[in-house]
Amino acid sequence: MHIVFFLPNINSYLDRVNTLKALSCHGNKVTLILGSHDTNIDFKTSEDLKVINAKFISGQKPLNLLKAYRVVHRINKDDPIDIIHDTFGNLILYFLLNFMKSKRPIFLTSFYALDRWRINEVWNSYGYNFFDLLKTSSNRRMLAGSFIQSILVKICDYVVLQAPGLISRFETYYLDQSSKIKLIPNSVDTDFWNSKNRIDFAKTEPVKLLYIGRFDFTSAFKEILLSLKELKNKFPTRLTIVGKAGSLDDGLVKKMIEEFDLCEHIDFKDSLDRKGILKIYQSNHILIYQTINDGSPRVVLEAISSGLPVIASHHPGIDVLDPKGEYISFTEFGNTSQIIDQVATMVKSKSMLKKASSNGRKNMIKGFSINKISQIYKQVYGDIIK
Image (cartoon, rainbow, N blue to C red; front, side, top):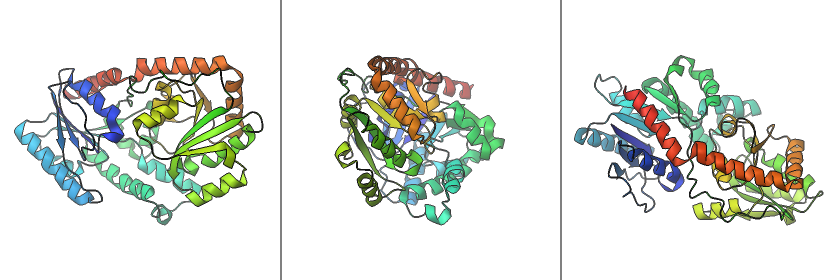
């Protein structure tokens, strides 16, 4: 079986690259097309994995789609493809020009975020109209993504989602296409995202909280700051922030921090590489993650694998990681009183922190490791070919 898979780059998707490496070790021939080969990675672990750099040019979407088309066309000519798995619509031109042909590969696409659902159910419900969404680059990408997904869902044979809870959101707008759904969870490299140098949970003064993400109402950023405002009055608390402006710009964030008297309780970190993020996970006590906008947040996977206890809002992409609530402490989205109570409870019970850390990591290894998810890829692809 010859599988072609597209990823924009390596740095942002290294865990998925390693999952494809593992898939190729299961007797499948995998060709990975990269928009940009942005780092040096050793691919010698499998003779059945080939990597091709499409050499995308930043900001040149039409040209890049043409580049991707030519690469796939050349691959299929030299070594016929059984399955093409696209991400982010980068192979849409090839799909459009070939989906009507009787003899062609099977087309798959992954929807890591359901853009039409996000626009209508999140942004529009908060009062943002079409023109408001044009003001930021991330929301412009979301608008474009919604249009591209509406095409892909019609011309692809299958659509891959990452969690069962996302199916109902998909069916809200694409009910007639629900038979195309396949489920493949995100993977996490549990060897890299490890807890070997984890901070001692017996020493929680100050309590070290972590926020990773955009400064955005969809991440309850303001509510997390309000929670910190109350928590610092209960016990010494610090919040490390790794993020950048979203719907809340830097000026507004600075104003809120000053207004809530939090300047002495917050540490900002610039953009970090994988090793830097791992160190951040290992040197904090609790990750606070709230979302109504994400697809399947990788941050939560990485944090749990690194032994970091998590307080998170209910969300399909997070609920699937701990359906019984055994190691993630769940809250309603943006509920400051629940966030405060959860932090206070965990800090009061050091054993609860240790148990969440240990059980969470064990379950990431058991259910979401690269080896486990590569087996799911193998099964899904095999079922499709049959």
